[in-house]
Image (cartoon, rainbow, N blue to C red; front, side, top):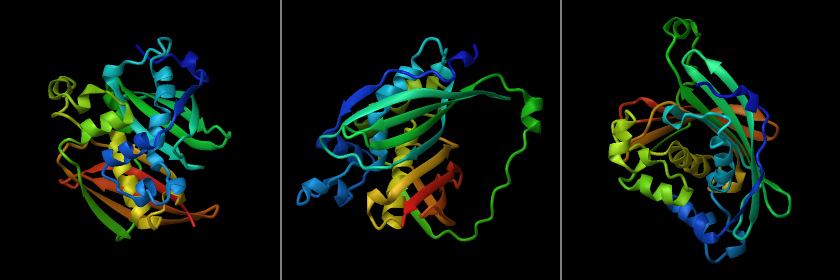
Length: 284
């Protein structure tokens, strides 16, 4: 059954989250990030949350949309396609975050449908802390003729990357990320259910892989300062498996509005992309 396009434009009641230092640091550990900005006890008033921690404060708002029976979302055919996150202000311990969701668009494709949910979050001062476009793909019956005629963009020739960084995913990464992020999808922790879903086994949360790349960007492009990362956008192209080593390559891509723009992609051990079309915007 197709998604209900009558739901486009629907907004959902806001949800409120109380941010704790423990939750922030648990999230950082869940993707192996020991950045002092998240942990330095000698500067407690300066501690901030990892930028990707924003997925936890918008999760309940997202679920209000995804579980809306009027939308008719088939969770068994759902794939997380893209994530576009902006970080206007840092999240700090003790913040009270209010988040809401809106169905921005539903579009038919030759192989299924896409839906974009916009998530906005602000702190107790009314300052925006997160704007996210969460884009899902609902798999449908493949129309081979239509798929064959859809143009595919040519891969740009960017030359040698500025940085190439390898990171190894721990065997228990998905369990730690589940607990820290609040995402309980069993395909990330239950071998049998993952295989029932047609997967080779447990796969890493796409947002966990994205969090790993955020560490690369902050370490290499922001001089370790997470407050300089203002936007991160990715397209998930292939699942990552626990125990694999992923490699992220970064290229300079100009400047805009006082920010430096970088393109990046992340690859599995076979050289296949797991993240394509990555974009990072960094404050100068």
